[in-house]
Length: 190
Image (cartoon, rainbow, N blue to C red; front, side, top):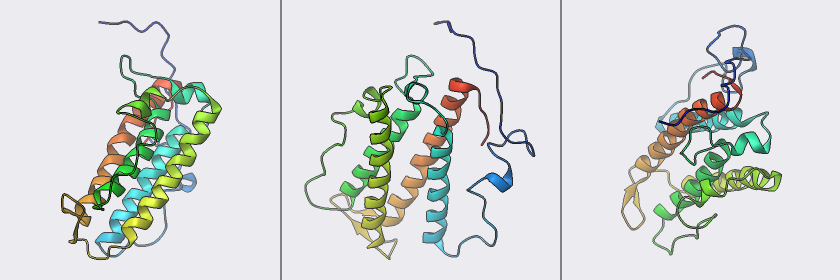
């Protein structure tokens, strides 16, 4: 079993109200006043938006080296790799809803999204820009479908299934981001 050669960072949180939170409730952009959204589509969209925000929050305040750090060797996973991976996944989801030829990969063959996550500011800036662009493009493509039961693409996937899968993908990777961030600088919280 491999041994850690560096000392682990001390655990800390910025929150003062609840020690297991990332931010205090009044500072958390995911907290909204009022009732939850009405309807399935709005609810799925609300959860997706919160998970997207959570991922970005986990990356805030880190430099390129910290974002690119592979915190759980021998895994290639890093926070920067997650940003790039989710941009790639957003693009791929658009391939699911069409019968046309698939869009090309953003970063190249399988796992290049993680392998290419190197500690350079241009790579970091590109990852954030790619993620924002691909999210907007997928959101726009899916907005054309009002019936969540509609089946689309070569595999006949239901729009509902695709929307739930998007929430699941971000939720899973936000869990990874929790652990990665804690390994980078010790910051903890939901």
